[in-house]
Length: 146
Picture 1 (cartoon, rainbow, N blue to C red):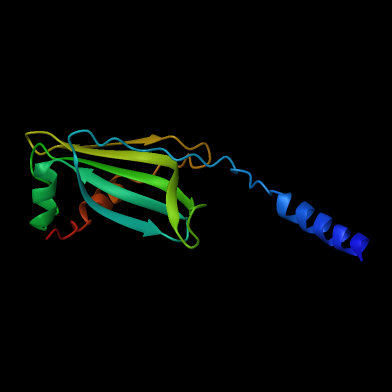
Picture 2: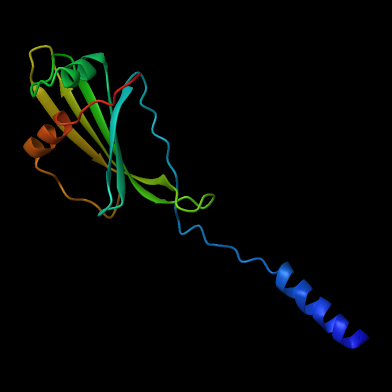
């Protein structure tokens, strides 16, 4: 009886002492610093598993709130896109991971729009259609703040 009890206790100790380390799968969380820009809106693309946040200055926010398809002079927009992944601390939650791109839309005092994209992902090196991306960024609706 002592032997059986000792064997059971030993087996329980072995199984409870085992720790399975999940590899981090090379997931890195990068925090974007918007500087003096304020948060305007966000979007998710479940197909590509990406999350985007749109930041802008006051002129950019005003032009989107007014529904203008032509941004106000001196507007500056930044659309930041991350790959998202499961949050290891919470079941069912997701967090931002690899920073994929930062798209910058600037409008000078004469109303001329300039667009540039900064890709930081090795996987996604496609050059988007500038006209389409400008229209996409300008189609965002600002979040409603109480």
